[in-house]
Amino acid sequence: MTTNPQPKRVQQTTLRAFLKTHSNHAGSLLKISIALGTFNALLMITSAYLVASSIHLVMFQQADLATITPSLWSLAALILARAVLLGFSQRISAKAALKIKTAMRHTLLKKLTLLGPSYIEQHGHGATLNTLHNGVEALHDYYANYLPSVAYSALIPLAILMVIFPTDWKAGLIFLFTAPLIPFFMILVGHKAEQLNQQRWQQLAVLGNYFFDRVQGLTQLKLFNATKRELKQIAKISDDFRHATLSVLKIAFLSSFALEFLATISVALVAVIIGFRLFFGTLDFATGFVVLLLAPEFYLPLRQLGSHYHAKLEGISAAADMLKILNEPIAGDNNSSRAGLSQLSLERIEQLQIDNLNFYYPDSNEGVKNINLTFSGTGLYAIIGQSGAGKSTLLDCLLGFHPQVVTTIKVDQQQLSQSDISQWQQHIAWIPQQPTLLFNTIKANLVLAKPDATTAQLEAAAKQAGALEFINALPQGFDTHIGEQGEGLSGGQKQRIALARAFLKQAPILVLDEPTAHLDSQTEQLVQTAINQYAKDHLVVVIAHRLNTIEQAKQVLVMKDGSVIEQGDFKGLLNQHGVLFDLVNARSTQND
Image (cartoon, rainbow, N blue to C red; front, side, top):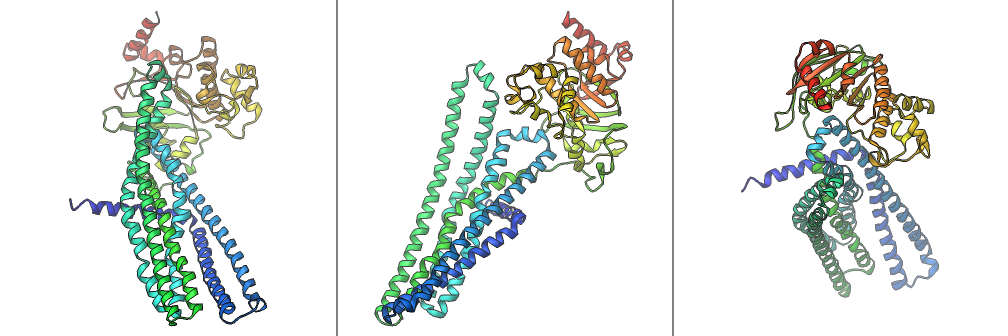
């Protein structure tokens, strides 16, 4: 029981250090914002003295308007200057927060790219999106409001104390002894809110995953008439999240009430003591009035810190998920310091090797083992095997989706490292079984492969993929909008757009997962011809299910139980009457 608090304190210290480190992305802007806010406070102190002095002259020395006019003009100038400084301070702190959020998203996306799609699939798309969006947005108030408030709560009361003590040390002592009560109760009450906020953030991640999965599977839910049941479950999870949020808000409101109460009591105590001292003549009016004017300003930064304390809780809860992503280890990279692909031209490759590739999914015996392959720079290579043989896993490793094994890949005798993954993927065109199409125009989907593509290049790629005819038949041609995942197009049309995008990229390596699976026989022949033509000058690796693709392959790789058990040309393997022979016969029987 006694060992639990220590790890939690260590964790909170780590999270605060993490947030502080990332504030360096806009550290100069934050410092400027805090400096402007502090200077604004100094002008406030000066204004208080001007007000007290002017009123003292009018009430006790019967000064006329002409006498105090210079003070009034100075006071007006100070008020205007304070408004300008306040506006600039808030604007700069917001700009700093935006810069930090941008850098944070870039860092997270860079790490997720290294971790690969498998990490997101294991932890849930909804939770990951929640971290990248809501989590990063939660840092805005932390950097724009909370961090400046921390600085103001130390600097502004200190400046007021330095002014008050020489003027009236008794009032200074009251300020000095009552000030620590506010942060003390803020931390005391906020400790409970911190625990509740972390639970709320975890519930939000669960809700994000659950809702994302149900939206993705909406078709299946309707087919199985399960929509009403799932809606009730979503309502229940949402209600649990609402209760968690209200619990945090209840503590936050309690905290604000406690801080306001303590600040009010402290100001009232100062006012009563000043009143008695003025009544007994032990304090002059100007000094007493200055102290009364500065009393609310002394506690204001501490009260504002309390009101922004919730932003700290949000920031720390969000940072926990970010730190989890950034600290996720990537095993197997011992070559991060080498030059890698930086000195290798990938306009065309001569040879691609995979040496002793072994990969297993976490908590599973599924994967690939003892893979040793050599691909020449051109030609069509077909990978076949029963479902679960490891074909897709092998391609995922080749594509860099499992960074821990990327060092088993050699390009023209140069071994890849994890730092090469991003550059390596730029030189691969990939078409999965279910290609991703964005909610945008057909042109926008195509130019993802080559942003500066000309109209002629777009048309050539579409023609090569057998897509130009149906695209031109659409109402707006290449500028026709399509729905998410190609909604509004047939399966074959989606596949041909994905093929056109791959052809447009003109990458030295083209990886496909049965590109002709959703095409009619005529279009299949056109696409297969285009792929064969592409393979004359590029390396094409395809997971093949159709006999037509396998027959035209330069080399066939037969996989079973995660291993390559046969390798060679189609006719040679067929004559051996091995696994390929059995697969071909089985498919022929099924077709009959």
